[in-house]
Length: 196
Image 1 (cartoon, rainbow, N blue to C red):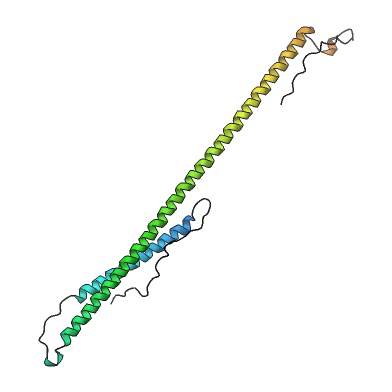
Image 2 (image 1 turned 120 degrees about the horizontal axis):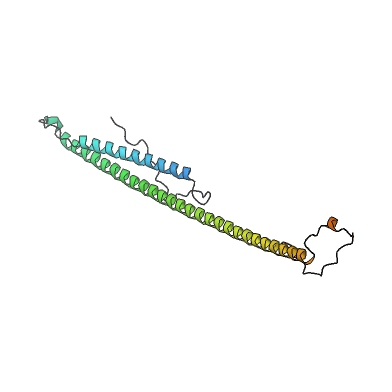
């Protein structure tokens, strides 16, 4: 004889909550909950099939045998027993169906919430990546601007040095001066700006 559900399962909580971790739900916890919910649905489905088989067996008409005189009410009692069995089987089937529907709805809700959380996590990661890229581009632009400014200053320094060479005769090496006298002081030029 096949067993039915040994003890009634507690109905799932209507509002299952999962703790938030790193901008989403703990995927392992959600997967575990869905796995348990699927097992419950399977158990209820098996119990429903067992109840249907028992009901089908109970509905097979018994062969009609002539009733002995002392068992005149036996047929009516059997009919009552069969009616009670049918009622109980229908109740078990209805309860299993309701519990299965509730578990499936809870599992679907959990999956939808997990998918939503995963999508939000993905959007947040994309926003973070875009922010990092934007900052890196800004820093690169600042470095390029500083580089151009330094090159401009170096160009101005080279121009000043060339101008000084032209003004004082080209060779500015103090050892090349045979007279030992220092060359005349150059006119004060604009100070060379220091690199920032």
